[in-house]
Image (cartoon, rainbow, N blue to C red):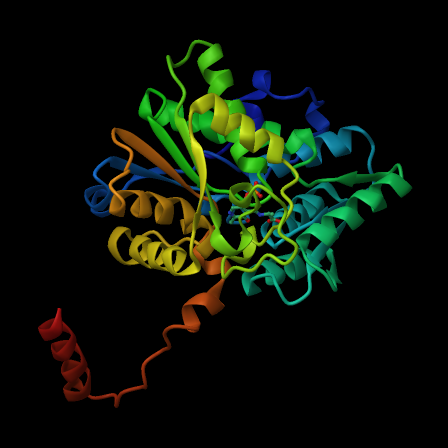
Length: 355
Ligand code: F0G
């Protein structure tokens, strides 16, 4: 696919109706499906990475935001609001800028990754730092929308978001020429797992492929309400994007798991960071911590002798550059060296000899 058109133009007949003049696109979608040979060997299946970090604002949220913002514009909305752990905020800010709409993003204070905050500031949205967590921010955003009829909610509880995000499943099937056997992805508010399942079933029902994948969702152990079976009041995880204790699309997640004979399991922060590191150092693909939860889960299943077989797709939901602090917390730039050939060759020889 050439990225001269956004996903609305490519999949228009499978998306909600909207007039041409309302369409707000920044060339989202058509992200690569990257084969992962080193991790495939560890897992014992053929693994592909759907790298959603290559969307315009560097996360999968753009797929949903192009549809949500276009529809909001078509309905004559003047402003939009969302609660966010960071990526929805960055995406809403960019699409609102393009749609010439006012944008308010409610985020848990001190809990969103640096790159995401910078994006919101760059696009000129109003950032409202809530002294509470994501779940409180979502409650407040819903209330704000009830109070004004020119204000659109652009969280994934808005069905237009799910409609846009389902197109990732279409692309996976198109790239493979069939549905994968398994899909592994991180789960936070549970909108994306809901969207993928909708996409895979629609694509099968349209007759393009014969089957749908088994869906494996992974939550961070400190923020795993769907594994615990009840909401978590104070969710905690290094994967700030999925630090959510009361997933709004819980029902959609459960449908995906039940109908596909899949599962939702938890992975520890240690397992998430290890997977993020392996993706970067063995596959050359740098994603943010939350995005590595799917691969962390697959590696865990492999260690426990429960690894899936066949073709497996893991969704890398956001780019690693979103969260520089996570990397800088465990490694730093080495000390400078003298500007001499001797000094640089010493560095290079040490490194080559130890490799
Ligand atoms: N991965 C990343 C990088 C995310 O930003 C999110 C959610 C998820 C996975 C989980 O997706 O919520 O649909 O289950 N981020 C939201 C946000 C909550 O505000 O940016 P989900």
